[in-house]
Image 1 (cartoon, one colour):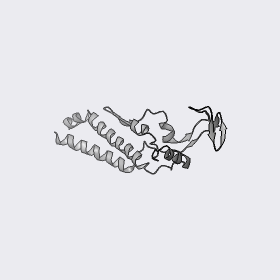
Image 2 (image 1 turned 60 degrees about the vertical axis):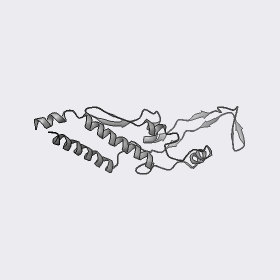
Image 3 (image 1 turned 90 degrees about the vertical axis):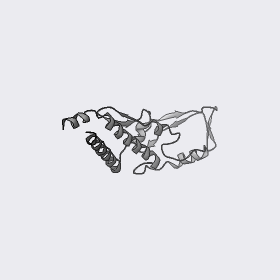
Image 4 (image 1 turned 45 degrees about the horizontal axis):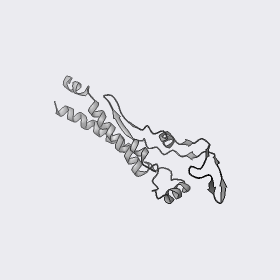
Length: 157
C-alpha cells in the first residue's frame, strides 16, 4: 500500500490526461455548436456573414475563440480556459454597452438610403452560448481516465 500511495503522490500525469479530456470536450462543443445546442445566430448576422463569404458557424467567425482554448495542469489541478476578452459574454450572455458607430474607410455611413456620419448603437443582447461545459458523457470520460491511471499504477508495482 505504501508503494501505491507513493506512486499516487505525483499526480501530474493524471492531471495532464484529465486536462486533455476537458480540452477535447470543449473542442466538441465548438464543433457541435453547443451541447446542448446554442441559440441560433441573429438572421442579420447570418446575412452579413454570407455577404462577406464567411461560414455561418456560431462563435467561429474567425476561429480565434476556439483556437484560444488552452489546457493547463500541474500536480493538483487540471483546467481549460481562454484569455480572449470577449469569451465571458459568449459563455454567460449579457448586454453590450451602447456605443457610437463611425465609418472606418469613408466619410459617412449609408443605411437603407439614409446617409449619416455616425450612428448611436444601443448595445446588443448576446445570448449565453456556454462552450466551457462538460456533458455527463465527458464526466464519465474523466472517471474512466482516472480509473485507467489507477490501474496502470497498480500494474507497475
